[in-house]
Length: 162
Image: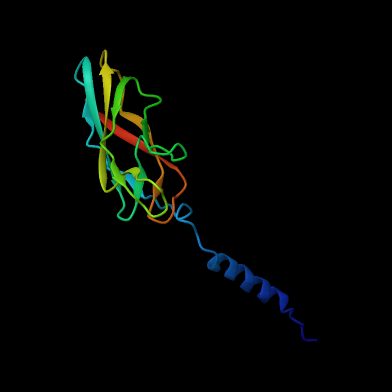
C-alpha cells in the first residue's frame, strides 16, 4: 500500500529555512566591530618610576566612536581600564577629539575617527615578578552618520618582555 506523505513537513522546513536566511543578522551577531585594538609590541619593565604604555585603536572608515568626554550625557564615553594589573595607574591620556556636526544632532559631537592612541602612565614601585602581560579593557560606542551600534568592550593585552 503506498504511503501518503504529508506536505506539512517540507512546508515547515521551507518556512524554517526562510526564517533563518531571510532574517537579517545584526552587525553584533556577525562579530563585527567598528573599532579594533592594534597588537601591542609589548613593554619592558626595567625599574621603578613612570611607565608609558600606548594603546592604538583603529576605527573603521565610515564610523566614529564617542570621545572620552562626549558632549551629551546620554552618549557613552570611550574608556580604557586596567582593573587587575600589578601596577598603579597614574593616568590615562586620551587624544584631542574632533568636533563633528551630524544631521541627527543639534550640536557637534565629540568623537574619534580613523586611528587614535590612548596612553596609560603606570607607576612602577618595583618590577613585578611573573607578569607575562598587562590586561585591560577598552569600552566604546561606535556610530555612523545614521545610527549607533550597541556599546562594546574589547580586551586589551600588552605583553611584558623580560
